[in-house]
Length: 169
Image (cartoon, rainbow, N blue to C red):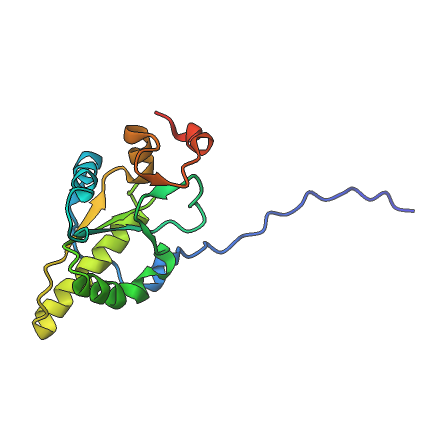
């Protein structure tokens, strides 16, 4: 009987995984940031005015949506956002929304990417068919992690303090 020596497992070469956004065009627009303080000012004036709020928050997180979201946010996952730009612009125009503010975890990836895609769509419509939208597109600086760091659970729905302990600065 031959003595067999176990072979070390061979390392399989994995194909590099394509990022989800590679299926879509690269964003062209540069979108300005809005600070948490500026957003809080919008919230501060919201309850005192009889007219509908003139801004919309879009939370583009998907599986990392735990711990809560900023009040009044609409959750549209970044991975499926590109196809919804037309619908979102139509809704904002019809509801007289003046500013749409995108955010994700830290607003250094998905949030800015979706905001730029939205701005690209508005710019393309303006150039191609003369569409006149008053909608301003912004990115929440620091994302929801920055918001929680600055304001704790203020103006949040579903806030779970324990979830945010891991992100404390």
